[in-house]
Image (cartoon, rainbow, N blue to C red; front, top):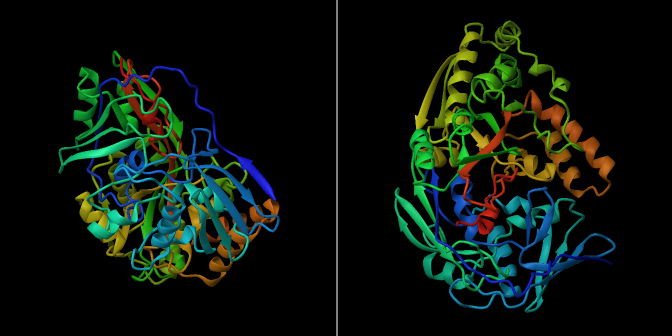
Length: 495
């Protein structure tokens, strides 16, 4: 039995003096607040302050304690026993316990919930609350990414779900901040959780998420001090803010990637030759320069940040930009004059909308007739969830394990497989990748998957960009995370 102690000891005797309201400016309102249902970054930017998992990921992409203080793994790798922190309470005042962990997992796995997190836990055969502080997960087979998925097991209180039906409009967690006010399309206000289990956190009395769709308005507000922090800044704005007085710009290579997603149930995207041709027609280096001002790299199916797993993009022949070869392949597939289709996207992220426009121009050079539909964000999310698109340009999050990138996105029936892609060989590799314990065997499996998906999969991976944030120089303690998480808001301080 392997036991891993996680709990870090808080320094006692320090004065805990919260100061002020940290004013954030964000591009859009959250598309719901239910941590078991949402997929949008705008939602997780808020949810991450309200809810906790058993573990969390730090800025070094390592797992750290959250609601768990330690865990043990059985010798056969099938049983994980978590010991929970004491004296944790939900925002409604009720004590947190092992039953809440079991309920939250069961809710994620319940098909009626429709959780996009479900495939991260489908190897769990049973979850048992042994006592108030002990949860035992028994797996049906070895599951290599199980611990890496623990941060996605947000723990929620059953009684709040029972009362409201879901958590899209209400939020009650154990996290550092409590949701107290929502003014639609204007702001959300969160106040410090005075019962938070980490001594001395959070360091500010409140967070206010100001909804400011225009990037230039957000940047101007940061310069004048109206806003303290912009958690997400596009590359163009980041360049201008670097020289702004009283402003600090942070940057880190991101795990997320921009993509062109293709609905393979709609012709001609059901033909792998067409998908290959589209990859040939995309000039990723031009996109790096035109959209990201050099602050990005061409994206394969796995981020370069996963250095032990990601293959170099030179390994994928379809990444050799060649519009003439794309035309030839389209003709071979029966489209000598190209074809017309629409790219769905949204305008609240400048890098996403600009990517769609540049991809449109590149594909037109290969003989395709492309229209870009810049939808309101809520409409985009709805159409994305319902696979109501020919193609879309968006941004996908990453993971510290390759399974998090690939399984739920490409497995037949996967919770984020909105492309409706299905390939038996890919399915078999995906299952082997998550159930194989040997690291070298897993690396070989994920190499095969990258080759299978890069050119003929339902996604044309475009770029892994640098993540930028910016804050007033008087703000201290906030760190940029490669995951895009805002977990370090609880450490941010104001004078």
